[in-house]
Image 1 (cartoon, rainbow over the protein chains, first blue to last red):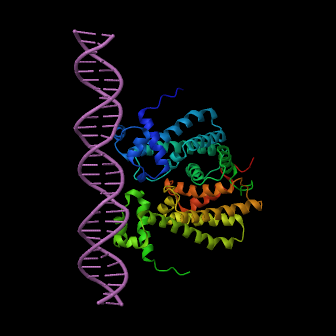
Image 2 (cartoon, rainbow over the protein chains, first blue to last red; image 1 turned 135 degrees about the vertical axis):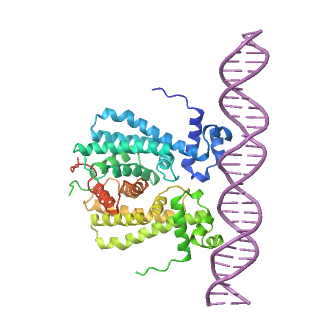
Length: 192
Length: 192
DNA sequence: CGAGCAATACTGACTGGTCAGTACTGTAGC
DNA sequence: GCTACAGTACTGACCAGTCAGTATTGCTCG
């Protein structure tokens, strides 16, 4: 797989992502984005029609990247649900460690109402995770009265970990801890 | 416990909370808050010095309410950690069901840098939850390599559940499901 | 090859509207 | 009359979005 040279649009999104990750929406000026991306303000409007569109584009790109990773790595698990769960956790964590601020706003729940395209890609990702759990339940390997909720927990927990990270949090630590919780909660080992 | 008549400040915060819960910060106008609270715009400035201060006050009040509830209910558990965990979950869920939008912005991670008072009360809440888990680990009833992370997961998971709630999500369902995950994850019952 | 030209990409000064914050006025209750 | 506050008018900073103008690229034809 070749990594194509980032387009102008991607460069602008990179700059915008860095700013939106660091400050709330209303504190980021279009001019800031333009100057960080080293383009004129008008150039941004050649690609998106408003500041909010830029914001949404960042989030859509984020979900697309996660989805691509899942599509790439999940098939190799050949249906072994714990392997799949590990792949999901790693995909999410890799993205979150690479772009913590973007991950945060992807789960922000700030803009209302949400853009239809964004809703669609977000659903695709959550449903993919949910499907992994559901097949595990169907095969008897997992026990979960509501996989939909568990998928949401997983996505949100990672956000929480990055919002207020414990000192010395590493990718491995977080990954192991999440798998620990998924495997057996914090109970001593016997399910009632 | 007597419920004191809400003060003028509380009425304003109620109105502001309803609006900030429904729209992002920059889409809420001070005038909207004033008219919903049926006060003059100037009156708001008798209590807080800026729009952002109002926003922060809502969040602080939210954490204070949760903390008060924990202080009230936890002692009756007399150190039985699973009872304490149930009390924590119920306290958070009661608040979240009563004020879902406020719960969301309490975990928003939007404003930077955070107000010191807010940091303090937020820490108090998370540390209280963390302490419950830590004592469970110390007594051998719980197994958790990082209670700090688990506390963050719990707080964030509830936010996630409310962001994209499954159809027919009730307080009981969510409570049972969270306790299910805490007790044994989604594993079949044996911890490796 | 390269001059001339068209199409495209980009720029940044400018504008118009918005809104936080302030000042002032009218009035209800004591 | 006086206090307290709702209501309203005002102002000035701020900034998203525009657009006339410039630079660059690529193409056509002698």
